Image 1 (cartoon, rainbow, N blue to C red):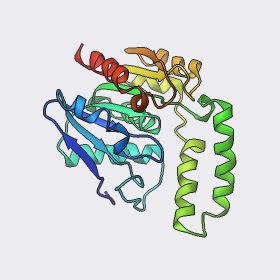
Image 2 (tube, rainbow, N blue to C red):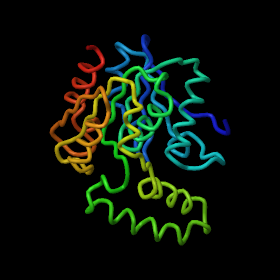
Image 3 (tube, rainbow, N blue to C red):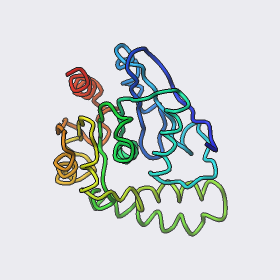
Length: 226
């Protein structure tokens, strides 16, 4: 492991790992950590190159982030955990659950996508344009390179085939907003391709955990406690 990942830890009980989205950090879950830690041992991680976790030298990809998660669990001596991932964090959790089904207890995918085509075109097009421009300046400075890498995650990743989702063994909650930037039929595709999954839409946009924490937390805890 070429980095040490920063994380917030709170509570006791079964491990519950929270994975934030692109360009964010563990503070995204400020509306969840205190609530979930009443019943679970919560770990909210800053992904490689995000928040207080250094970039390191390894590839800046969803699959590398999944490898980082495995290292984190090994370092913390976590044999098996519940995973809750938002957006790119959901993509990390999804890839991890495909690669390491024995390490995942229950899985919550919030606003995840299999590929860039799952994002509404009105959102994805500006990202693609920004990525092309960012690449032009990537060699000029570290900040420009990191910007290109961040945008690149949304242009080049995660590229998971629906058939791969059949490898997920964990009972799964797929959750999204009614006005999410992920296409509704794409979210439904993910849920239908995971063998033991439930699908929930909550009123709101992509950031329902942050903007509608009470309803989001209720849905998550109801799923985890059943």
